[in-house]
Length: 319
Picture (cartoon, rainbow, N blue to C red):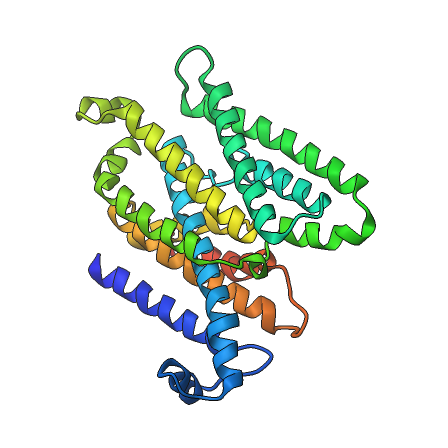
């Protein structure tokens, strides 16, 4: 366990250094070390401290949030195809953000509207799935899929009636764009705190993954644990979407990749998901802003191009 997490930590640190060094202006490792020590040219200090480091932290936090949320959703729903967006949270966040863009609001209000939309989607799905009785994973999943389809229809309608000069920004937000992240620290703090809160429950999550009846027979309070998992996964997803828009793929594939390599122990999977998801998105964002610099590619495209071959290789090797 310790060796695996240490290896992922080294990979995360290397990805962060690469993100700080690469760009339209390359910062060599000796120059980067001088900047870290407080020396170096003014241009390099501005590039590293004011531009690249906040963006790299935002990318790492967003990737970690999505991967941990995906791992929690897959345990909660007992479904390997579950991802952070399967219950319609990204759709609610997108509607809130697009409404703020249509109203001409600033970045801070757009982020606040996206978070409010995600929380509205969370309460809507949970309320409809719960009904007058208890909810089951299949009922929660079906309700989330239907609500997500409704949000998708609203998004399509909004894009159809939006003035053409506002469409590029809205489309980039929908595809995921880390450059929107102006204050990365809230997302990073949420990631660290959530890992600290969920790790004491990891052993119970291992039991819950086998089914609610087995978990109840072994003394686990199933319903409160499911509520905690659902609310925490919703908060992680809402924070990630608020930080960088709707970035797909990370929350679905990263937990699967780690299970193929490390097994299915949530005590390892959850912190490993935070490190691996953050590393993947940092690398993807670095490529997205450097491949055709000064133009940028949607980071969601890069995550798929990086992750799909790696996942297929691991799947083939696991045979």
